[in-house]
Length: 241
Image (cartoon, helix red, strand yellow):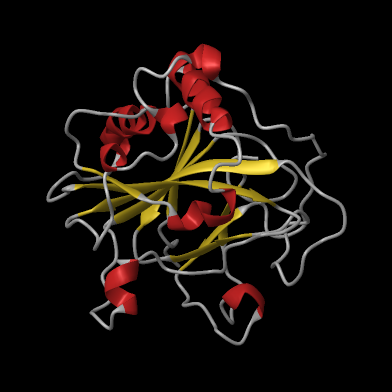
């Protein structure tokens, strides 16, 4: 029987170390700005002159894509959450405002995650199966996942119409907040589009996350205060452990 093609491509050491450390310092310097709306705070970058360290990162990561044909730009945002309280359900990336307005379902060509730190649990789970509204965290009916552990400077790349989500601190489907706390799971999310998603501003058009701006001094960076917790997990063995 022929093996299924992997859903995800992983690249460890995706950025040069100096560039990765600079990106991580800047993301930590954002602190808790818009932490509760981190998933709704998205930006558009058309591969032109970068105005943020994230846009410099996008240009550095672009050669890892399997194809650049027809790509017009990237929608990006910061993922910041504790794995004891996962804040995102299983979903498929889409043009969110267009879909909510009753328009057609449009997916990015590629979705990608650049992990910035290690945490307890917090595996990225990717599957071909659709989300199920009746299940906790809208997990698919069939739990058949490819898994990727969050590791600093690891890039995970997958097709833009695949279902994905984040497992909790015990690497289980999130169904409730867990007791205790955990350090923030930090990641940069990048969706690669053939057309600009509806209503997404550029970074330069906003006054948000100024710690990420090109020209902002690293000396102004103050890290997020988080505590470490041991790693744990119990589902299918993920990629790259």
